[in-house]
Image (cartoon, rainbow over all chains, first blue to last red; front, top):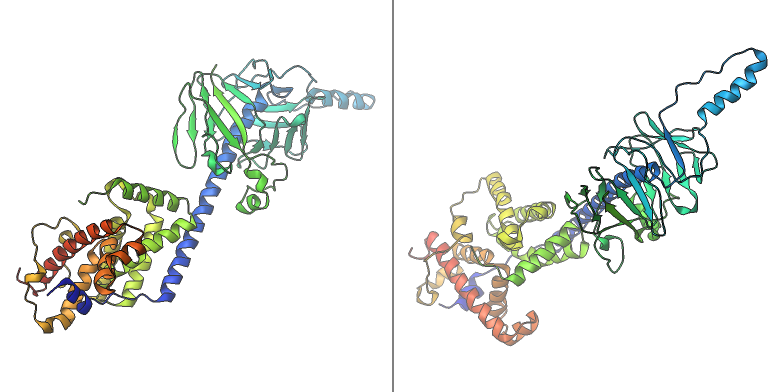
Length: 288
Length: 206
């Protein structure tokens, strides 16, 4: 008895129903779509969270002519009588209004010293340090001219500075920094031009690392960050790790966020705005 | 444990990566590559019932897709992993149906290392009537369903569809020599599995 006889006479392969096959494949594709969307949302959230950190560093350092001060104690108008009411009001106003400055930003906050570099110029070091906390978020205070970046610490806009702060949007003219703040607990989303950020040794910087091919059609070099010294943590949707000294990292960002709705970026937004997937390179160097 | 070629391992890694990204084309490739094999494997283990088979296959594919991140290419092929995933589903289905496992081999014998039980089918004196028996059909189907998809496909093409080696090579986009070589291995694999199953079913001396 040979194999041919055996199989031809005793083998009856099952025949799956065509409807079942079609339905199963459809369901598998739907599940894949769900996974794809979930991954994208996770990347966007991580992206937004990390940009909040970068934004806080940029703003706190020499990028904008800002002055950082502890929250002012409530200023009570000095009532010297009806004739002095107007003067008291002016004094109160002046007391809460920061002094204008046109010098490169120098401020003092808690944390590690930061310095911002641009391809064509260098800002002076901050005289203090910036508190960097991965849970940090920025809160827009409607109607006020400052943003709280840490408990008891606010960034105050200086008169005449190259900064607008309007309705929860902090933007710097000339396209240096644009920052939109939604609410206290949500990450800040920001736009960064090509620049270099230095963070002092010992500071912590969360960097969102994603494969370049997720953003740049045709592929790009993988993200890199240079560590001159110091330590930083890296998180992305696929892996966590520590940035290594000596390597150069580039961070790819979405540009053009000024038309963002108040809620977090969603897949529909990306689909409507394909230019958002064009990468903007941000070089990060961790060092002194 | 079967040795896995580098090419197969690479293909499985790529497929895993695509499935993790939720790539629809990769999902379709995953389905096309393993559906028939899985269906056949399950069918003979759930009493040759299409309804039960559909349930198990459906649940297995969905579970595999959900947990594809746990698949480790260094530990075996996606095919083997998929079959492993299906086993729990099969057990549950059989338990639900109160089906005895009398006809089902110890999976460790089927799927693991088949040792020395080997019967040369040419020397087996199967009664003519036995060829028509449901028992034998079940064992043959079980054996075919237990083989790796590539092997059972080759045997079907050669012995059920009666294709020539040349036609098979053309259809599979392989050389005739490659097809012959694989066919030899497929035959040997079938003999081993069938002999084991048939002995267990009492159709052959153990």
